[in-house]
Image (cartoon, rainbow over all chains, first blue to last red; front, side, top):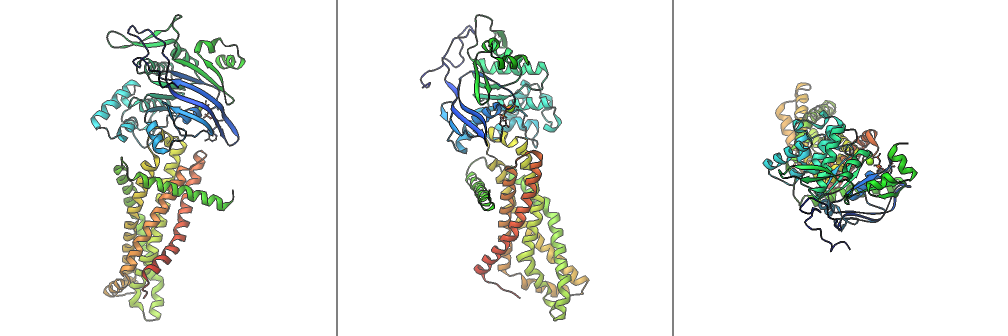
Length: 290
Length: 256
Ligand SMILES: Nc1ncnc2c1ncn2[C@@H]1O[C@H](COP(=O)(O)OP(=O)(O)OP(=O)(O)O)[C@@H](O)[C@H]1O
Ligand SMILES: [Mg+2]
């Protein structure tokens, strides 16, 4: 149903860097998904779409199933009922081989980093490239580029055990972004990081959204992540540098949406400002902490 | 769940794992580097304990059997006795048990902790099949190394037996060697190499399966490690009986 709508040049922007509304073709779609662990219902009849180039925030209290949503997209867990589409393909019935093909298009940042203990930082980041049998020179170039990106070049020869929690997370991000996936799933990427590093990660997400046209799901508890990502956009200036500009009043970022999970349902879905303006008690409490 | 159903379910899962490994063998990447690394850990790493086990088992066999043999005036057959029991039975079984303890436990602990720290999920998320990347190299290493380790254990067992016979009971070395040669017929040698292949399969599949299905955090790692060793050891001992029976009827027996 969304197949026929083509996105202009993939970036969703015109020559002046102004945003033009485009109908996004869904990168991820949940259709009436049900999931329960034993008799604990995690998701019941959940449906949503994440368009191409869209960033979808997933909010919700601890244990409401945010990480589970991400694992469903990767096919690490199968839904009890309903269908999940990734780039138009129904992955619900896929076998391991087909899932591996889908997973190669998706970058995932795990909540706890999930680095391979027995491999060095270099080998962790290079993992995908090594698996694909890429030439070692190219691997090294790419790994250095990614580590520079997350500001961890110095740690290249360290083992994961020698890193702090935040450093591990950043290595996890570098590992997920290697190979330029079309879809990136962030599971609380900024939890426990200092504000400047958290800001860097948000800028990264903005850049992926606006310049690389990556679709992403961004699970977070931190409201400032939402503020940054839903109010700023990235453009490339004349020198080819990436600049972050405020969207301001007149622009609304069509490609950033928020969704809140509660008790197995999608409690709220809409734009960041709408969430802020909501009078719902639960949402007010979630935003203000009281 | 009743135990029979539980057993059948586990058996089904293990068979499924084997099937995925076999299917994966046809495709690239083949993970040769991992295989070599595992062979180093399994084979070279276990050589010491296996040689020691073999040596002292051969020694104690002679130590206990020699007086009886001497009573019947059959002490010149001592080497044959050690050779038969070592090559057909004790060599394969004891080696497999030692390797189950050393390698089986480390496999399931390693895979188990990868499960609880989400590394297995991360691996799958990055588009790699854990069956191929982790299970296949370990299984191949066990299938290749266990027969070789068994041969080493046999050899050192015969050596140990010879030293005990010579040093403690004063048996002539040439008599011992020629009697060992009577005991090592081709059937015994075939039996002695086929068994460790099966045992390697058991250790590899049970330990990998237990490791990959670890549940419940670090405590779970301990549980699956224990189970891996216990289950593989029991399976080795039980299957040894049936393997012996089958091989015996296939090849016939030559005893003393
Ligand atoms: N493998 C599992 N077996 C049983 N229950 C599980 C399993 N994984 C998750 N759950 C349950 O599913 C619920 C949702 O878990 P999930 O990890 O998705 O939460 P979350 O929203 O990511 O929470 P957090 O913000 O704390 O990360 C939890 O209540 C948890 O108890
Ligand atoms: Mg979570």
